[in-house]
Length: 627
Image 1 (cartoon, rainbow, N blue to C red):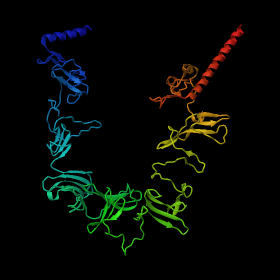
Image 2: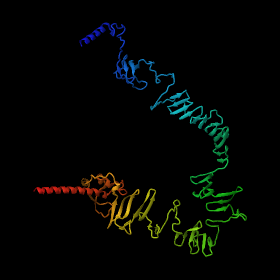
Image 3: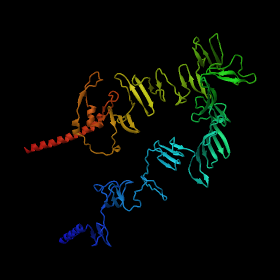
Image 4: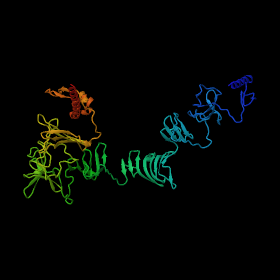
């Protein structure tokens, strides 16, 4: 220890004397404060972990001339650090030995690539954030990103839209070729040289000279939008929209709002009919088309009006007949004939009458009499006649009127009934064509036998039965005043255990009302085979002791009958499984109590009480034995 102190003292004394220190040499350089001489050793500079070029950490402050060896990789570009020698210039750390001591980087300096560079991002994101108008560009106007307005320009550094292409065309394709043949593509072209063309969109097939285009012409004589098919040097105009609002199909200069060069087919498979409509300036609408029997027009072709205007039939540019919603007449007396002496109608069928008049008796009809004496008639009359006002059809004798379809009588009308000509023969209405209302004085019988039950008029609020069928099910409501029951459930015969009614959920029985020897039982499903996680309940006497029992009177009970029971809201705090939690309106959705679900807990409470009783009895017996 004394030798070490002695050596240090000599070094300090020599430093004070000569202001130079030599390690490994007794003749240090006169210009050096410290001269280290060695052939197999080095100097180990302090090793620390820098955090950034601009941070003095882990030093307390920047000290000019400080030299360290950094062991960390830290910081964010351009002020990041990597392992190596650094010196401090009093403000920042500067790496020692770099090729460019000026800390060159693209964030502070311009420069040129000396060779190709590849940026491998991996799962990292390369994002550019800017608010400049020309934030990113390639070769001036070749490609420009306007970050200030969120726009991209190609051929311009001042784009007006989200994507602005200036001075060229836009082609969209898959970008590959097969055997030298271009793939299908879309070409968008503007008018560069003026003239008659305003621009076009081409849908090109594998050969660029074949495809379809939408082309605009701006010259007054042909101004419009043209849909074309092109094949090498041949162009075919398919559809033309002119600046005068006219449309041509196969015609470039339509004379009307729509002109079709060739035949036109109108088809509407969705509604099973097709038509064209024509509307005049004053709102008169006519139409022509065809339909199937599924449409409102019936099967076949049709021609007519949509508005309440007559349909005129014109010959030699003059109307000769007209059809309205209630008659088909000539346009003048003695103008045309219905048929001729040569071309005659085979039959004439009249809907209400055949224009037969009898002014003296104020009604007109036709009679048809069979050889057996059965007489039927059809006609119309006023209110002064025995038939009343309106049209009529019927029998003159006491025979039924038969309604015939496909040469077969399906229904008949007698003096007291309107019935089908056989059981299960026809329906009254259908699933699509339904009667709006059916009014019945007594009842409607539903069933397969004459004694089937009745469906009475009325509803559950006014008195009667209400049957409702809905998309998600249906219900039956029954109301009856007085002491008589509103719903009777009856069995002609039955044994104990037979169900009077059963209740199902999604096809599975959940409960029933069944016959007993002298009454009925109300049952809920409790089959062990339907249960899982079976364990002894923890509820019992302690639970029952928490429940308060009340006497009360229902507000709606005018007799003020006292009832003993629970309050649903209080019971819900103790046994929520025994309470149905209702809504805000106590009249339409009240809270309700399932008294039956409390029974198992009462049984458990009795069992616990019995156990306590037995224990007390044992204690009493033991006390008596000790005496």
